[in-house]
Length: 265
Image (cartoon, rainbow, N blue to C red; front, side, top):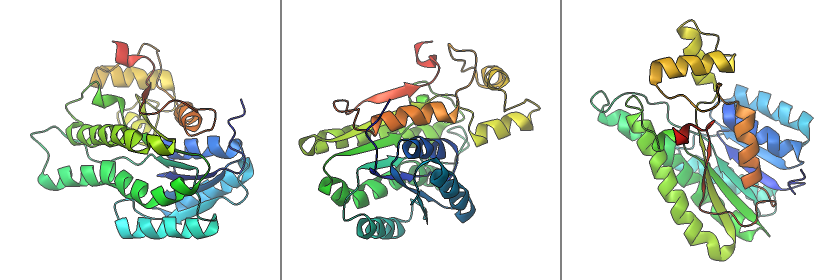
């Protein structure tokens, strides 16, 4: 399916690895001009080489922590100069690295979770809005998590941050509707991310096998899906790419689960 992304200007915050990189790849495969923003230069070097091979010859990598509002403003100012003051697509995939139950978490961990999981998205959207409004068409896709709908006690702060993403995104979809800028959320379920596969290996499970990975998730967290396997980053990236594309012309304010059916259990 042609998503209408040829020469579209796209930014993926958190695009250096995992689901962010998978999403950037989907955009590049369809001919978009992709810039990825991440904290690690080595990840960005690998990502931009990959994206260039896939169809984004001028792929860019910009080192920035989304929690650093001033740096994020610099990133989008630089992209505005490079891309004629226009941006078609903003995708925010970064999430917090905080785990723990409510009675374990410190105030510092709560603040870090909100900063990483929600305020980074706020910074990016705020900096990108003038460029998005200048473009002929524009889309925003923010990554949340299926755990906002199906709680886990070990993800108290993580889930709270992602719930903020849901609320802000819904508000943005209302605010930006008159500009015809579509804002949607993707909520992955149990996906074979580096963090999850690494956890599986640490307990002696082959994390690269999505069926065995789902078995471990079911046993340790009690969160199975209807499908008997974990999801793959590329499967999430494909949904995000559609939401970010011109083929999505009337969906806004939606929260799309990519979770193997676990929302229905």
